[in-house]
Picture 1 (cartoon, rainbow, N blue to C red):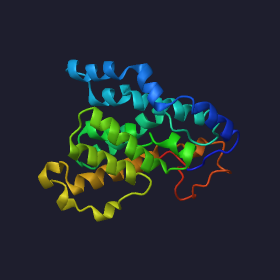
Picture 2: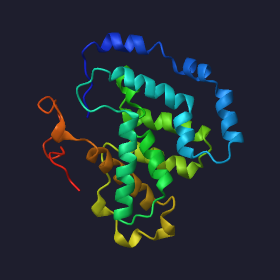
Picture 3: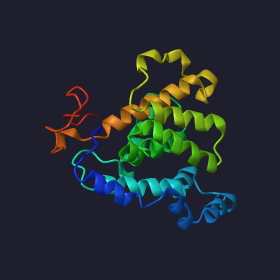
Length: 220
């Protein structure tokens, strides 16, 4: 959800700011992380993202800021929910995006939440900056980085699916084309919203989501 709880937020920010990004990276050992990339042949790129010191530092801060949040939280479990739902959409609609790039975008789509709590930077913008650094360190190509970053920037407002033409589906085998970027952004946006179980939420009265946006029943 789009709420930022104000209760005890100042104290929480002061406590969590003690987990400095550079400090976390140094404590984890950036050299060890880079050696992992160079020497482990079969590790998935999703695992490389998860293991990145900056990713771990941002996850820790998000958990801290949202420890008493009454609305939907932005946990790693949420990231994985979005990944799985987006991949199901990809299969059902025969979009032909790779499973890997869908999961990579989903794992990173809300990683900027802590920055929003700290200084008000919209989390899509902050997340794009964080993701670009992580993806670069993990050896992603410029095209791959641009595609994932575009999905992160767009995940709060979808490309209209009606504008994506059926005839475009096979263009260049849906590689890193404009069509593929639009599809990735669309399914991450839709999966993000579909993952929320509004019908079970105890904070519905306080929520600022419109009734049209809420998931008020189980949809399959």
